[in-house]
Length: 53
Ligand SMILES: [Zn+2]
View 1 (cartoon, rainbow, N blue to C red):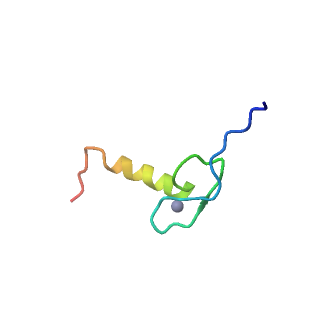
View 2 (cartoon, rainbow, N blue to C red):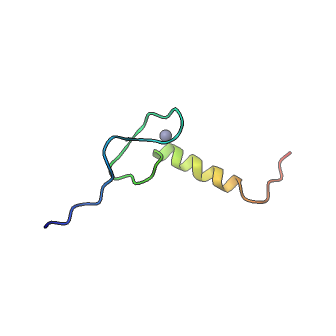
């Protein structure tokens, strides 16, 4: 049996509300590249020092 390339299911959409991006089968994230970066930024903002008004 041949080892196949690891891919994700086809026709997956970005989980971001309202985003219609179709995820690549090679993208194992739940968000498209735009929202994956955006979510990563939000995670950083949730860190303790939050010294804005
Ligand atoms: Zn998206």
